[in-house]
Amino acid sequence: MKDMAGTSTETTKEPRFGRVGLMVLGICWATIIADGYDVVVFGAVIPSLLQEDGWGLTPASAGVIGSYALIGMFIGSMTIGSVTDRFGRRPILILCVTWFSIFTALCSLARSPETFGFFRLLAGLGLGGVLPTASALVAEYSPPRARKLAYALLFTGFPIGGILAALTGLAVIPSSGWRPMFMVALLPMILIIPVALRFLPESIAFLLARGRRSDAVLVADRHDIELPADVTQSENLFDKPAASGALAELLSRRYVFATLCFCSTSFLCLFMIYGLNTWLPQIMREAGYSLGSALSFLLVFNVGAIIGTVLIATTADRLGSKLVIVATFTLASVAVALLSLDLPTVALYGLVALGGTGVIATQAFINAYVSQHYPMRMGGTALGWSLGVGRLGSIAAPPVLGLLLGSAVALQWNFYVIAIAGVLGAAITVLVPPPPRESEAVCQSTQ
Image (cartoon, rainbow, N blue to C red; front, side):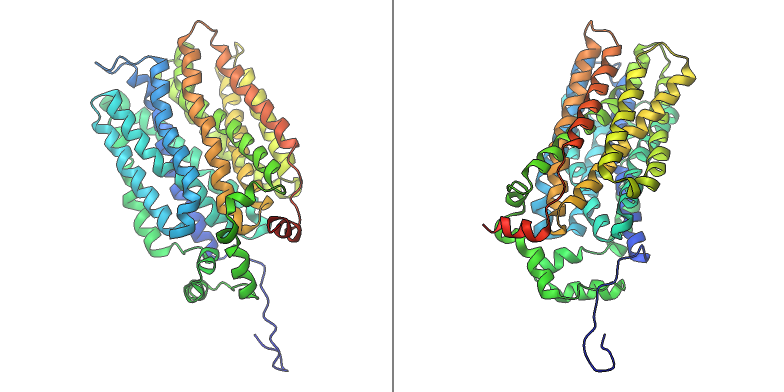
């Protein structure tokens, strides 16, 4: 754009939640719903798997099988950053959804726990790539002032997937058993992929980093987005990880302590999320509830997560990420610890809902905090590693709680272990340092 004197006055407008931003958020939100279903469905079918003829599963062995998908997710999360840096975020997200849909559906055909676990492991590879890739796309196409809200809305997809898993279990398992639960996983491939192929844009930051300026201009023109005013400077900025390595920069002196803090908080939060989503129905069965009532606790957990996360997100930008994460970690710890008491069922439902709010909101705001702490050129890798190391917590939760359930330890200790993880997460969040100024970080990384 030029003024009357012919001088260029091109500037970069502050991003708005326009059509393309809502489109990206909607498509990525749908992928997280599918992700949530595929993860939570295992917790919904555990009571049935423990009774499957010829499998001979115990809570401890079921917990080990539950960790197989999470091991795959760990591998997927840790490798997705370098893969997307080479091939782009859009095609990798589409590939991940297709991959986990197919292998989750194959679980319905398993005739032994070994085959079932193998398919879960392979499905996990795709599942692990979905969240960091979708988060990075949403971060790029969301206005900075609304990024926490965008992350919160995106992460509500996970408990919505959990709700669908619980409702499907209530409707399907009593009459048809657990196998149809996994065939439902084909729906994302059928419903989401055609929409993503047609409407999901590629990351402009990725296109600029790969020297594909003409493609970046096409995407920007198609969706009425302005490229950075100084494209050359932008290309150099985004291309920085190609020269020095985004991972090396994450572990540089400027960022290493924050990186360790974010990895630790993700580990603890995902331990809580997957511990509850995997074992809450069986814990309630052990406490004397019927299968239907036990699954209803899983339903309430995820409903509470959706409502609470959105409500908290409306104030998150004013309070700041650190304060919100400390508060949600604390809320989850207190609510889960109180589940160990002999309380009326209505009170237990309320505590389960608060626990869902606490743990799901916490992870949503950790992701937002990570995206704000690091420059955009490092955002995908930072999220991938934070969630990747965090997946170790999700891997540990099913077998640890399975061992506790199968031991002589009191049932309440399952809740205490999860609550302790929340207390540690709140303490570590307090230690996160402020982000360095970008000029200082770039200078430091070149030394």
